[in-house]
Amino acid sequence: MAMDASLTTIGLGTISRNKANNAGKILRAGARLVSPEEYRFAIDTAQAWRDQHIEATQECFSEVLKCSNYFAESVCTYRLKRIVSIIRKLQRDQTHLKLGELDDIGGCRLILETNDQVRQAAEILKSQIPLKKGNKEKDYILNPQKSGYRSHHLLFKPKTTTGSYQVEVQIRTQLQHYWATAVEAAGEIYGAEYKSPEVRRQAVGLEDQERIQFFQIVSSLFALEEGAPQVSGFEHSQKELVKELQTLECASCLLDDLAASTDSIFPLNPPTDKAATLFLLKLSREDQLLDIESFRQDQLSEALQKYGDLEDQIEAATNKGTEYEYNNVVLVYAKNHEQLSIAYPNYSANVSHFVDKVGEYLR
Image (cartoon, rainbow, N blue to C red; front, side, top):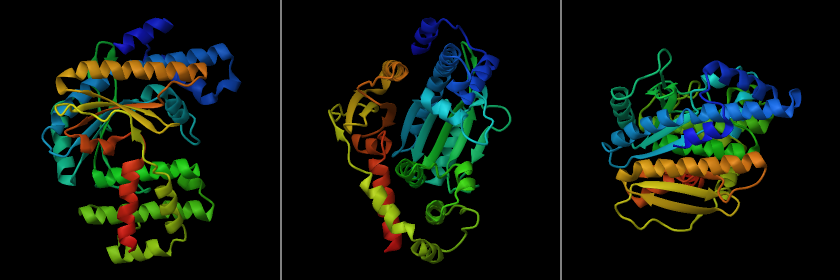
């Protein structure tokens, strides 16, 4: 397994939570405050800690796969947080996150059609995987975040050969997924993480404030359509919300920018095996090329191994300051090839749906 290879390579053995937290402090402080050797060791320690989440995340993904079989149009994904993303999260302003306490290093996502299915899936998974003690369930559908983010999060803590590790499983509807990916795409376009509390607190410019309000209004429109609670402060009728949306100067430009960002990626080898339900999506962002490798469900172990090998190669290239042929990789379960577009490791399909949906409201 990739975990064993990584740990052996750097010779660190099993990393305790305290060691992970100490490494996190160094990474949070930044490379300029310590020697290059200390910073490199902290990165290696964080990498080993991340690798220790592989077994637990794989166990959760196996259960998410079983759960998805109950729902006809479901899509689920498996991923491990990249080291660069972990460091970025630790270095956020006004946060005191500890590496050993991060609950989303290992993650799975289940995308369904309705909120009823989300609730059903949550109950199924809670009966199959040990939950983390304490703050183990966050229902952002019943209680939307101020940003407008809506999803149902479960924090599991399965036991593995090296201990217990937290894995986050996000369960959401397609509409909620379109919103979340559109916010991320807008963040890449304008250089601001609009669902982040820090960004909302520091948004002094009128444009950023309007963009934040735009996504809050759209989230409330989507919630209204799904018969779910709306974002606090935006509990209005569809007519009133659309009128608010039309008054925002940023709305038209924002939709145009999102539409322009959705250049379609070109699949190098579209899947042909009709019995395949597992797909390893390997993306070259620079070339906008997508390489798809297909597996049948009884080849899950092989698919997970290949995912781990690719992640190791991407991380090794990043550490050397070079580029690997792929920039991103995600393992997806989908019952047919058409469903794959919702899980592509870029924003093309999802953002296009978002733009079309909001365009309908404005028309």
